[in-house]
Image 1 (cartoon, rainbow, N blue to C red):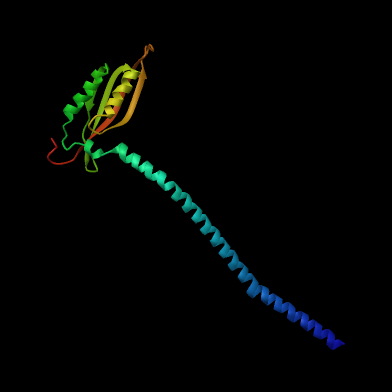
Image 2 (image 1 turned 45 degrees about the vertical axis):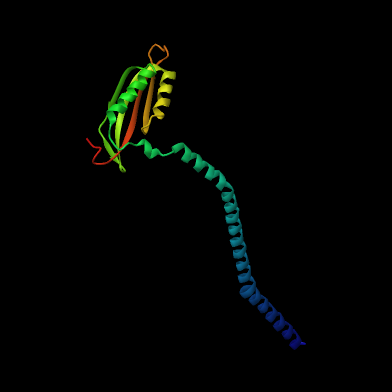
Length: 182
């Protein structure tokens, strides 16, 4: 009977050891691998969902790009090869006259070179009604030369009679080449 009790203890110990070996060396590593595979699967599913969402947006982005190309047109065509600033500045003064703007001052600054183009800063000042100023800016955008408005300052007159003083800093461009420099 003592032998039978020892035999049952040995069987229980061997069974426990087998269960421990099974859990430690087979079940736990397999469980970790399963979790890793499930996590990788989740990451792939998220990547596929993101790709599907991105591909659904692709036609919209293509349409936006087409619209930008249409809006920009051939912007380099608006950057002349010669400096030829005098006639352009006279054109700005003519635009101001056309819109009945008063106390006009149009002053070019020193040239600046940037990425194959030369820039000339231009300061503009005048006074007029706000609607006249907006019409002036609209026409300025439609000129055949690229103009970038960097700063606009509008100041109401002191007696609030509807007159606005405008100060603008703009930049005009032309292609940098040795023939066009003066």
